[in-house]
Length: 374
Ligand SMILES: *Cc1c(COP(=O)(O)O)cnc(C)c1O
Image (cartoon, rainbow, N blue to C red; front, side):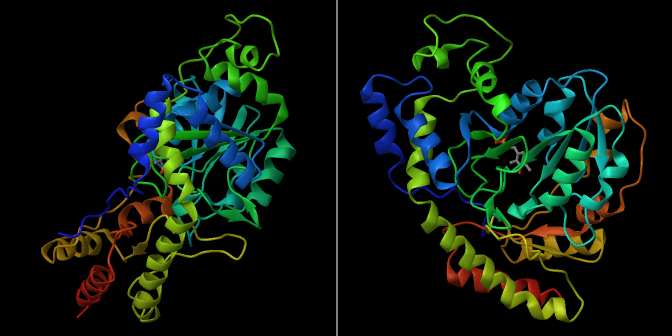
């Protein structure tokens, strides 16, 4: 069986973990954490980067930082992972779900404004498959109405919008290093803060509501409890693992892009024949090769394709179940139809995608996708 995902180890992870252990400092915000922060701040010109234990945690930090509370509304695409909405629900906000674009699972940017009410506090955009949302449109709506923007960039490491790195547009961005992403640390995440007004408080929330980070930088002469927060920072063991991966980022990205291109060019004939749709990458966006998906015509065909591939030894999977139809959401909210979100729920199939996918396996998967239509 060709698995859907296989976490790739660059080889130095355990060496760096050993270094961290031998250094005697294994709690958070140590040498490896700082190396990771510097990497993101230098490499992607992000103003402020803070490692977190997951992207979910980074989104929870975002919700706290933006003072989201009962009575607030947050606009979130329905076609996304639970955490994009849950982080704001935990703060008591009402989620207003937005539909996907017709040509891409990302939020339909041009329909955001009609969801804005006087209670709207934030817009969450998800750069699905690492492909940028049209951030000019999103930021314009946000500025016009005085709303915050959070980028769920969980899948979007090393991806750009009009030449500028994702995670650097909204007031806040959140990345994931879960083992299914391009760069991994088992569980892990990153919060990026692009609004200077939020920076110092982000460090406090990160360290259990204390101004410990400011104390260690010599900015205050003692530290104590000054705000709300939690233990959002990962241990040095996680940061050490992550740093080993970051050192090899460009090589990992190059390989992933070559796999993506092979899928795309080989499956193009099926698209030309009108049988499937391939991923669409707008001119303003880059492709970080986070995943490769195809969109088939209906849910029955999707199920048949997935089982066809399974009998051929290929593990392909569908993706999100639209959140606006979830049991949890419908307990307290009314159902509203979101056609495109449902289309991608029903018809999108992700093909095996990982660094170590071999040329032969890739060829075999492509051949089996094609054989479905014979
Ligand atoms: C993976 C993912 C998350 C959650 O990331 P964790 O690090 O597992 O918490 C959130 N949003 C999106 C869009 C994701 O793909």
